[in-house]
Amino acid sequence: MSESLAPLDGFAFLVLDDNRYARKTARDILRAFGANEVHEAADGAAGLNIVAQHRPDAVICDLMMTPMDGIEFVRRLRHDEDSPLPFMPIVMTTANASAATVAAARDAGVNEFLAKPITTDALLRRVVAALTPRPFIRTRVFFGPDRRRKTIAGFIGPDRRQAEPVDVSAEEIRR
Amino acid sequence: MQAPKGAKNFQVIEPTSKIADKVSRGGPEPAAMISRAEAKIDEIKQDYGKWLEEDMKILLAAFDKLRIDPANRKTNARALFDAAFDIKGQAGTFGYAALSRIAKSLCRLLEEKAAIVDDDLPVVLHHVDAMRVVVADQIVGKPVGIPLEVIAGLESLVSKRLLR
Image (cartoon, one colour):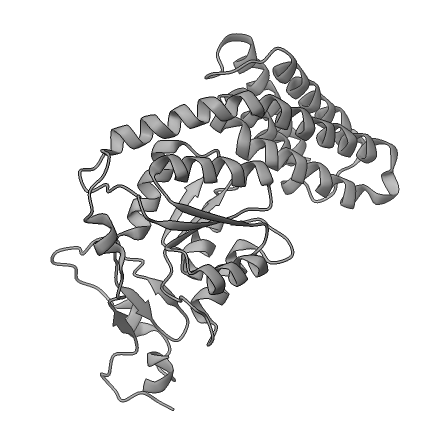
């Protein structure tokens, strides 16, 4: 276990999952970690309302929900003009952890990804990693935590961010 | 508008956060937090038997519909997938690793097969029966011996069906 792990006393969370047992499990684990507030919702739309109302410190969000799934929830939270907390730390969970799902979640702007079934150890690691401040990147097609986890010393090659389409105004980039 | 040549077309933002203030207050060590959470999981395990009973009822009802209502097979296969998917995601947390893996195999068949046909039903039934046995006999922990052989057999059956 990393030395950088920190207690979660005083933190507020939102657990977003359409399975009530999954919500209860995550809620009870987070409380055991010291979280003093854990809100719950069963889909993305309800989750957005709770974020606006209670402004939690982080969200544990399942991917497959209806009517609004986890990916759409993350996109709305990151991109909507009236989003209350676009920099919200988000851990996405799913029982379908294929490479395609992980990529979709990352591109939507999640901080961390956790395959179900969850374990206490893995949840703590992901939550702490998500809560650890990390730069956000805004391009024309992406807004979210920096997807580059490390800097490769002496890297020679194209800068893919620079290679993205450039028909974008400075205003659009700032937004 | 075209960005000037050489201009950066991305922005790096350092989010402001109150998190640093919160984590500096001290508290239990990670190992203690994990122990506390594991104790909580042990408590919830008492309830998981009841949850699992409910999840299995939903799964069995979905399987019955899939079997007897071929006209709505796509919808019924989706309902069965959802039931198996819930079990797959939850069972492992409470020690039912074999159950989670069988549910995963069933989900794979239901998700990757373009359409569920009559010839798929025996394979689905084998999964459902295996899940019933695991729940009835409360087979927990890492699968070894016969449960492991059964899982391998089911996964192999699914792979073969997906080739057709």
